[in-house]
Length: 342
Image (cartoon, rainbow, N blue to C red):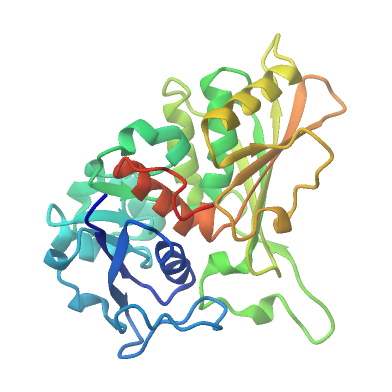
């Protein structure tokens, strides 16, 4: 590639925005020519650990000062119900990769119940590709508008969709138990909820009422012949900064053995560079996926032979957000999928 692709990042001072800049700064085909923020202007961006200043990039400017004519791509690392206001102005003027929930859902009525009725361009919901790279790779190639999945959905959909698509598990009673580092709640999260003077805390929240449930259900149903996949979802917040583990309990369909599941995951990793199936005694923990774009999967026996336990681990800021966004960018541009991610 002779000419570099000009890229802008709006919302670059949030956790996800800073991870995006870090990844894109190492991309051989990218020139970062705009960094935007809602609150910080006129200085250089620091990295997420506040140990490095990106003085090789432009000074931070207000998000709303960005001109779509000046770049080839814009990454929107903005809050839900904010991205759509920018998409309204940018649509068809620039390639858009949105990391909010504003364009993940196909149905506006469902969006409205979860994120409110403020959406300036709901007519464009149908114009965005759901950027779950390993599942929608062919649709992402050449796409101009990509909605990056949420972190919980990514950790859950990557192992479940292939199982459902191949009719290996029963879709009537799936149990999902997820645990996330607190960075998933953003910079405004009150860490006092997790730390007292004596100890650290850990808690579940929004059980069977989390906003990501509709996103998970929408995508699972698409691969179940349109039939509803029934599941319970219990998310938790940990006092760790980054990382996410989803433990999934499911029933095998009649005639299906654990070896069928293992074979499927082993075949998946052969054709997907960021899927890793662990078939040995290696521990699957936060350390094994932090600062990486991998989704690592491991299976465990249940006392009943017709049931199975699946554990899926990702870095919520990378595979669950910024890394997956760049992976989609690479696929859309038809360049090597792993560029700047390994």
